Image (cartoon, rainbow, N blue to C red; front, side):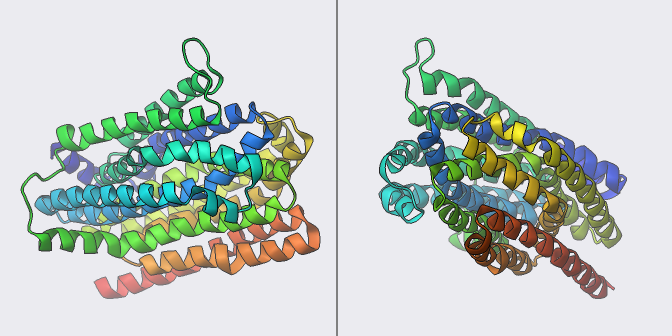
Length: 453
């Protein structure tokens, strides 16, 4: 595990700001590529028509919920593996990494079975009907069969990041997105020898791209890093690993699933304004993922940085990591707000020319981007709390943001002011949650300092 030991030294000794920047930069490209993954689907499916685009928008909360479950397990694995690396317990590192992947495979089997049986009733509850529901069935009927290519690489890439290597996961994500971008138009529209499969083709292109990430991630874990254990463990050993992973993973998965579940409720509210409004909201949601790529990249590397430094007892570097991340969030959020204030309409029109779709997407971008800096505070603090073994506090922040603020205020805002009220509610919830996150981490750092003496 030579690479792991080199990364450990860097995370524990190199300058904090430079270390975080060097780790975050490749992840920015990786996360941007995943956003491009989604935006490519949105762009090409949007060319099929607003009904197909609305169908894709309806799938977004469900796909994000399953992805969030995988990310929850991955974050649990990353937290315990990074701390084991910080304390130099490499035998335990291999056991935890292996058992994390086994847990991910169990999630795949259960999720695919339940998903395939509930497509029409579930999306009917979200407000889909008629031909839109038929298009959803075409898309998700393919997507569920390829869940293994979505879940396992997410867990695997989190394990790789726990070693301090952010470049490889970033590269894996870029290659998967590139494959999807190439295949999307070929399979959706039937270019050359390929059949025209419409929205079903978008799902197939996604699975081919994810399949590539699966192969590369497994190669790195098995061959390059040798992070997997091959001895047959006692059931008690596996259960011990799962308890450690799930102690952080379950609240983290719940934290991540809360957001798409809440988005599902908000999608239901927006659906009352028609398919074009749902399509516009879907475009804006995907643009938000693009916009927050740098902040999501930072939150994904803050965890391993904090975990290894906590494992080594270096609290001063943990504090410096949070301070640096907070400043970065403020700068990025302010820049994004200015960009969308001026260019939101032009950006929205790239994906669909329907005036109502463009107006809805642009309205969301202009209003909600005001709160992106605060959302960055929330993302970074949540990642840190999980590694500090305070997953319930992280989950509490998500509950506050979505079900304490966004959903009820969106219902009220819709009743009083229409879609403007819905989007103002989202911006307000981001702002309040970000401020509460800052207060929470300050208290937690003081408490940790008292424990460590």
